[in-house]
Image (cartoon, rainbow over all chains, first blue to last red; front, top):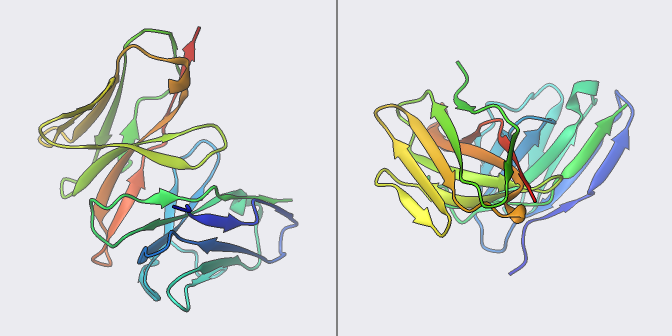
Length: 115
Length: 113
C-alpha cells in the first residue's frame, strides 16, 4: 500500500517569498492533517480536514498560511509571505477517519529553509 | 505548563541495557495515548498505543496512569536499531470539538555498541 506522498522534499526561499507544499494521503483516508515541526520540537498541528471540510484550523497562522483540500483527496499548504521563523519540516499525515484511536500515517515531510 | 512533557534527553545506553522514558500530560480529558518513534530526518511512525491496563509488544512495554496523568515506555535489551527519538503523544479534544494529537518534544535515545 502506498504511503502518504509529499512534494517537494526540500525548499529554500528568501523571506517574504511564497511557497506551496503538496500532499497526497493514503487512498481511502478521509482525514488529512498538516503539521509543522521545528528543529528540536515535536510536530505541531496546523490544520485538519475531514474529506474536503476544515475540522480544526485554530493553530494555523491565517495571516500568512492557507490550506485547501478541494476534492477531498490531495491537499496544498501555502505560506505567503514567508518569515525566517517558518523554517521547519512540514509534515502531512492521514488517517482513515476522525476517531481518537485511528493511527495517523505521516509522509516524509517538506524541509523548508527561509533565508 | 506544557500539555505534554517528556524527560529531557539524550539517553546514551549500551546495547542490552533497559531504558525507561517518562511523560506527563496536563489535560485530564485526554482520550488516547501513543508512543511514536522518529528516526533522524525521517517522519514519525507509530510505535505503540498505550492502554490503561498496560501493554507489551516484544521488548517494549507501555504503561498509563490516568490518575497521575503519567505515561511510560520501557525498552528491554536495547538494540542499536532502537536509536531514535521517542515522542510521547496524547490525543486531546480540541476547542473545535474534534480530536488532535499533541506531541511532546521527544527524547533522543542512542544505543552504543
